[in-house]
Image (cartoon, rainbow, N blue to C red; front, side, top):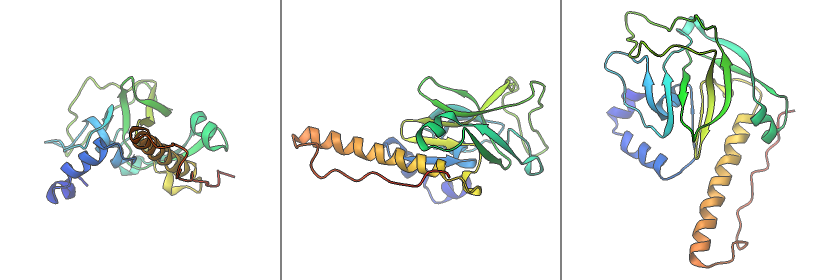
Length: 202
């Protein structure tokens, strides 16, 4: 992804899109892209889009054969989109968030053994030896117009994360429209955009 974005000179446009406040959702590698800082990268590192005030460890859970599924506690998601308090997360060579800034809302985390060894191989250089795994690592966050998940919601039948993102995008759009209308002195109730009305998880 990074090589293609660099080859086609997409990074300036992508960064500008994020800075404009447009809703963006990054899953797995997309989460790494949106982070302000990444560790455990290949030698030489990779370019990032940034925007999420967090540090992400690339391939935190290991290589492809260490991919797994796990039930995550998602109370905040359930409170907005309904359904059970858990979500089946599909982690494929997944990253994890080691640190998050004060403006980052944590939506889900995952417990890991305190003696877990960070992934390494001949092709990967661990850039921060001090990045010791804690009892829980963060796997889903939101900061303003940005949503990030270390797992793949699109690989399950549970559509609540997609509904959450669409409703988030609607809120951002309505907020921007209200600001423009208020600045022009027009009645805010005029020409309101309809909200997304999506089915919740059954």
